[in-house]
Image 1: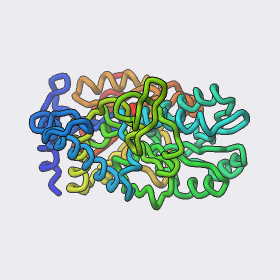
Image 2: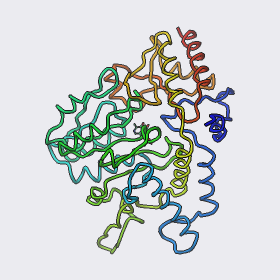
Image 3: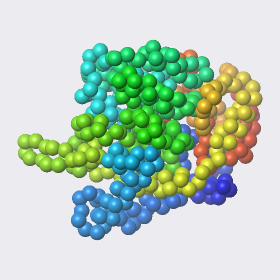
Image 4: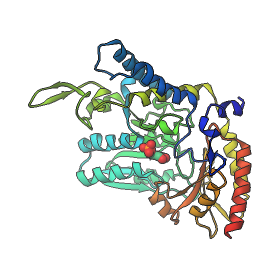
Length: 399
Ligand SMILES: Cc1ncc(COP(=O)(O)O)c(C=O)c1O
């Protein structure tokens, strides 16, 4: 596939950043969107535009079909054969909060353990801390190794009958490590624990098959995989979702309401209280179409960048896992990552700096922050060359 043909479909790539040609290297935070995604949101408002699930008139029916057909598309995208297992939320963060709250409140008690890793995003830490505070359960962590991988012996040592759920990231948003999800899930299940897999950084890059992985929950966000903001997904095994109480309540999620009490609708509507982001969900469908249509070659761009990065003077690259994808985090000796990001910004290059919502991991790495570049379908090796040239110039300026 001609990369220029892909790039032409991203209008924002024609924009400037500080008067320079934009080189977008922050897709791990949020991806850019192709014109088909932007167009499908517009189309939803222009042609469907009505409230879903409530209206008998034709426009409402069209809007409902657009929304529910996207649910089927999302299910297929991650290898689930049941669209009932797909709950739309506003973000992966909300999906994890939903599980921590609705599953955790019912299933955790004093002395139980929620097992996490130290490479989790805050959104896969804080909701568990809160539910543990409420139930008397405890959060425990598996520490990552120096090369940014998980020590499976440490997992074996940590697993015991108190561990009720293991919640971990499929791909680290700092190291780019692809964790051995299937092995971890099998070990957790053997122990009798459920598993939540955070797919925020894997769904955009890897082929996902939740049935083969056998995870109990899988969460991800549309905005990191070419889709609109404001849409998250929670996949859950239907028997587990059935057993969970609603997370939020109100319109859209009820079967029957009297002045005294209420009963809940079936899956997945039980977890979708209120008017959902229907146009954005529809846009997510277009993102999936795009990803299915354009098998991407940016993994080469990532490998090319990695090779060049290792040659930069004074660089520390965090993580060195044999299985990794799309993300490189680094520091340069005696230079603050914020300064690097700010100077590169003036060259049109968007580099993220900070703790990447991974403060516990920063602590394990004994740093406060680092810079991060990340790649997606629209990035080129030419962009990498410019980035490396400008990074070297920046280092000279700041040394
Ligand atoms: C690994 C990981 N998990 C969870 C999240 C949270 O995603 P969102 O902000 O879309 O809810 C992110 C976002 O950066 C992430 O990288």
